[in-house]
Length: 344
Image (cartoon, rainbow, N blue to C red):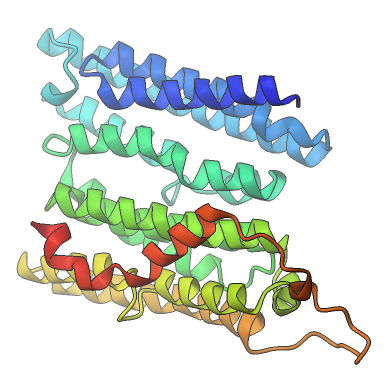
């Protein structure tokens, strides 16, 4: 794909998301979602490989179905209440259908099966876009309609997603699929807190975007597509090895790293609302996710690939580290002390 067309596609992608995030009318939100979907499909299928074509087809079908369900739910609501305002979704069947549609659009379990397959068929930069930027529009719709969506459905989606994201990621060897299940688990945490505290959900989303971008940047820089590939990261840059290890531990939610903050606040809020069994299940599911993050940490930072004395150290050639990698990695590791500032 030529740089000009790629730029047009990326700008269309950004425009679609911004239209959805800034609209209060359901038709405008739907137009933004459709523009967003149509812009990402050519980006996914740029590899000219049957796997990427299949991924683009799966992505298009699931997103089109979810958008149609969103439009249908808003039409039913407009028919019964006479308003197209996103914040005035008061008809219960419409809200239930909207929750299911947004779950499909985000890739929340049990409507998650498309996400790992689509990521596996995409390139690493495209996978980064799908797991970060593409979550903004549906999450903004969830935020706008948080007061009307059925809390029990959101909590159920949250707990199923966090458990599925941890459990299904255990036997994966491809880094893109691991990141897909990581995304499902994190979105599950955000969904479970939506009906209780939308502000914590937004904060969790921001931190998730920072951590995922940091890890994907290091995977793109080291061209690591499988767990086996990560064992040779140390030849590229010793600093990158340490940074990747810390970002992975942050994604796992270990203190004193940034990733501990959303988990801590969500668990605290759930316990405050007398949902201790749910909080316990969420914490246990985080341990499942932590296992595959630790496995990646082990292969990246604590193993040496089979090597000889004649092996070339790529880091001696001083490879240029992307500025985005440095910035996002710093944020993904050191934000915890700023908790009071973030919450205020």
